[in-house]
Length: 464
Image (tube, rainbow, N blue to C red; front, side):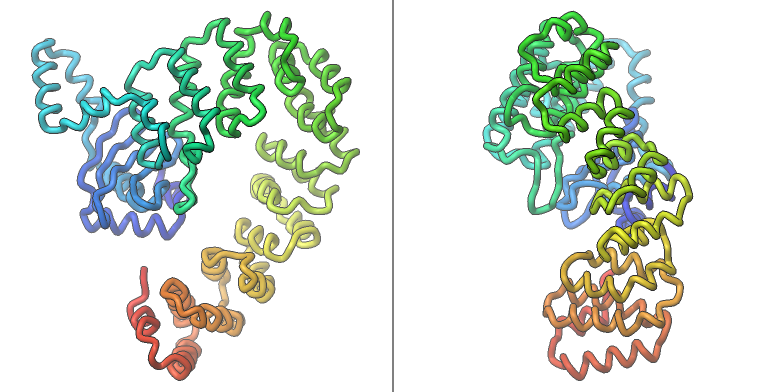
């Protein structure tokens, strides 16, 4: 991954802070094994980082949790050759005798006794209470390095389904962070590694549960669909399997007509039939979906499939699709058909149109929409980052200074440090384009809030 890609994926602010952490020498060490980096980085505490070079994602034990500055700093160290090559080390062991390898292992364990605790831990014990992000990281490592029998893996999947809400699922509300993939991906890899005919019943049992968690369903269904050919006989003879499960499996093993007939002759609603036909015959589903004006369902399906022309064609017939318009933006970027932005302006809310202009990097349209975006921001419909990112794209900020002034006043009135920090960033943008306006705004704030010490501390020393 190149630095430009890292900046795009992690965001400019996280990227710049991560680069600064690297320059400050906060990276204690980086080890590369396969497509992953394992690092220790000093922040307010020492955090453990895992960076997946293949997926362009990092996990960290810091409060941010994922794609954070610590991950960026670790990648900088790796890019500059400051890492230990774990693969080369493992290859070097191939030429050593058993006694030499054991001695090396002994030295490693003496220096890092916690390794043994991880090897001997029972993964099931983690599911007795709330599973934190840090616990999920630990489970991930245990599942990847320990050969859990397949039946044990199935027991764990069933336990997770039954007690998902007892241990609060794989979500940290405080950090707004989902971490189920850390547990479920290696768990289903264990199951998929040695599939047998008997596993079909396990899949049906799990997938037919009325309250199966969505993330568990995604993994179980994905494994079954990929390996449908292994269960051809079981699928054809299955009698107590729902249409929603059996029809896509029939299509996957080449029985497309049977699947279509099963769906069309079922008791499902028309909307459910369209959703299911998308997995069996997308063109037939599109035809039926357009008759029902079910544009959102079609946009999401073809958007995920990256069928960009289909997305634009369907959107042109729709009356707007709300947050799913992000798929339309992807299609516009992929096809270069920027004139489709006019459709977004006609069909979507002001806040969504503004975010689309931001995603499409349309500086002129952002400038036009900014006054209305200001009103949306004050209603809580736009984030601070959206405002800052848009102002960084707009070439001439001077006509927008009155709108920026209103936001500054709105933020300072909250009497909150984070609001002050945001106001300081906005003032700094004004300062870059018009020094006189900047001084006027600061003077106005001093007259109104002369004794708010925190405000002036932030304005004099704004956070980076």
